[in-house]
Amino acid sequence: MIRVAFLVLFLSISGANGSTNVIYGGFSYGTVIPEETITKYVHDRSNGQSSIDKVLINKIKNLDNKSFTISYEALSDNLSEKDQNVLVLALDNETIRHISIPSDNLTRTDIILNFQIIFFNAKNNTLTASIPLEISKVINSSNQLSKERLIDELKSMYEKEVMENFFKLVNNFNLKNKYNNRIGITKVILEENAEKLISKNSENDIFKKNKFAKSLSSFISYNNNVSIVPYGEDRTSNTIMLTFENTQREIILPNPDYHIYLTIRGFKNVLFKEGNIDEQWIYGSYVEIKVLQPDLNKIYFQEKLKNGLNVEFSKRAMDNKDLFEWIFYQDSLKILFDEFSLQTIQINKKWLKSASKNKKIGNYFKKVSEIYEKCK
Image 1 (tube, rainbow, N blue to C red):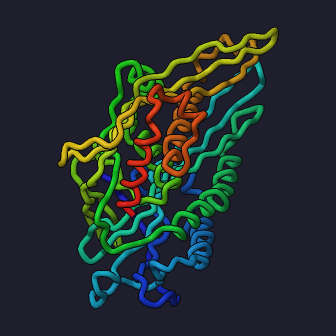
Image 2 (image 1 turned 180 degrees about the vertical axis):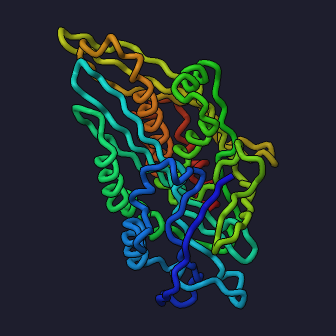
C-alpha cells in the first residue's frame, strides 16, 4: 500500500484550449516513511515552501504539453470528471548506501531515488497514469559522507537531475483521460541462486521485489515514453492509498492488459585479467523477461538475457572483495534493464549478441515496441 500526502496550491494559469485540465498536487511521499529519509531536510516546509516545492513549481510553469493544462486551484465538486485529474511527484524510495575499501582509502556512496509521477482522477478515485522515475548518483570520497554533505548532495540532485528528468518525462507524455491498453510488471521471481545473494544483502527488506520492478519499470518508461501500472505483487489490494486535502482516498489501480514477468536468475563474477597491481573482474547479471497477455494465453516475448560489467580493483582490495561486490552486481543489472528497454528504440546488435543466444531476438523486440505503442 502506497501512502502519499500532498498539498494543493490556490493559484491558476492558463494553457492550451481543449486540453485536459490537471490540478497541481506538488511533491509527496509514497511507500517511504518521511522520518527515515534525508529528503525530509530538503523538503522542510516549516518556513513555507521547501526547496523541492520551489524548483518543482518553476519546472511545472515551463511545461509546454498540448495534451493537458496545469492549474493551481482547489478541487471542486462542480468540475467535470475529465477536469478532476491531479498531478503528484511522489518519492517512493530513498536508498543511501556506502561501501568502503580501506586499503585504497576509498568510499563509494550510492544515492538512489525512486519516484512515481502520478496522474489520478479525484472524481472517481482511479489512477489515470503513472510514470516511474529512478535517479541515482555515485560519489567517491576518502571518507564516509557526513549528514550535512548528504543533505547538500540530495538538494543538488533534486534541483538538477530529478527536476530535469521529471520535466522531460512530463513534457513529452501524452495524457489521456482513458487508455485502451495498459502494461505493468505484475510478477517478480527470484530464483534460488539469486535469492541467496539478494537476501544476504537485503536482509529483512520486504520490498526487495518491488525495487527490482521499479528499476526495470523506470528504464522502460523513460526510454519508451509509456505509462507503467505500479507493481503490486507485494500489496494486499489493487489500490494505492493517498492522503489528499487532509482526507485519505483509496485510488484504484487498473489491471494491465499486458503483463511483464521479471525473473532474476542469478549473479556470477569471473576474473578477466590479472596484472601486477590490479585485477579486472566481470560481474554478470542473469534474468528472464516475459511479456504476455495472460487472458489470451499469448506470449510476445520470453528470453533469457545476461549482462557483464568490467570492474577493476587494486590487489590490496581483494581481501575484502565480498563485502562490496553486491553493488557491482546491481550496476550490471541496471545496465541490462537499460539496454533491454532501449532495444525497442533501436537494436544494438553488439549488446544483443553478448546478451542472448537467440539470433532472432530482434524480431521479438519489434513486437514489444508495438505493445508499447498500443499503451500510449
